[in-house]
Image 1 (cartoon, rainbow, N blue to C red):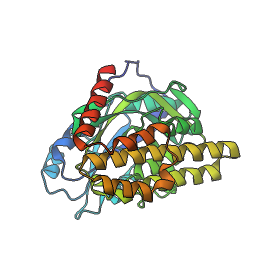
Image 2: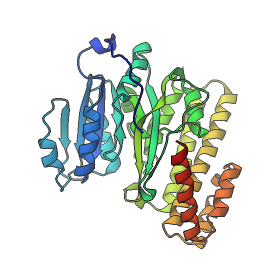
Image 3: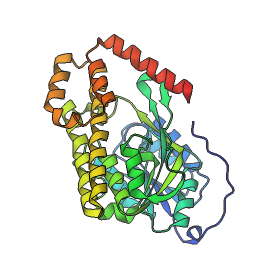
Image 4: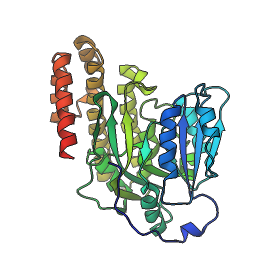
Length: 346
């Protein structure tokens, strides 16, 4: 999937500065085999002015030895003596980044060779950009399939009012994940880095509000691939934690809009679409838990507890909830059919 059209490289004013413009930071723990592929994809970038920072969260597999065997002066390793936790390690990446911009790239995700080239081209045109977002495929490990990124029909690659990019994301018109976002390092640090009180949605809580700070870059092409699987730290959170986290992000986005957007009508549009977005995502969380063995009774109890949030969903979300009451084997068959159709139509 991760193939972009070729374009000629050219030296720009940004490229003439000293030091790395971008830090690609990989937080990792005990995933040596996945990490090597992730690193190889980073080192294949066509844009040269970057550093690769790996923050090793006290791995006890072959990670340290594997990293020691990579002979590339773009690689820098920070190794913690004890495991400090997932999100603190993400913030270690932000803390140690030397680039003016930073990309947080989880060790099980990958980026396309032209990712930085595409993003930096927009930064060259508008050096004051705080954030550039690109599209990302989603690999579903459970179903052994990849869902292609959804591209915008309204926005072309370029620089736009950040609120317009945010609204495309909230409406579900584009697929953006943490690994396909370039953020200004100083701005991220100024706002506290990766928020620690969002164990499931810290990624969105970090980058989405930055779109409300003025203009933003948008690359309407697939530049990364995000891996979704159940064997992850966030995958072990409780159902209530996952649902509550989504709503907290919706409130955060609305709160930043109140502070940053002078047009009250636009603020209300952001609020409504944030609520609708995370109601949809809440239905996905319920669906995942149903497939993983959650009983109908527990599912309905959770839906009732969070009914005030889920009621903001669209009719398709309500239909999804009704489908969750079907036997699990039927739900699994429907999911496989859905993802097979999506893959064939890509």
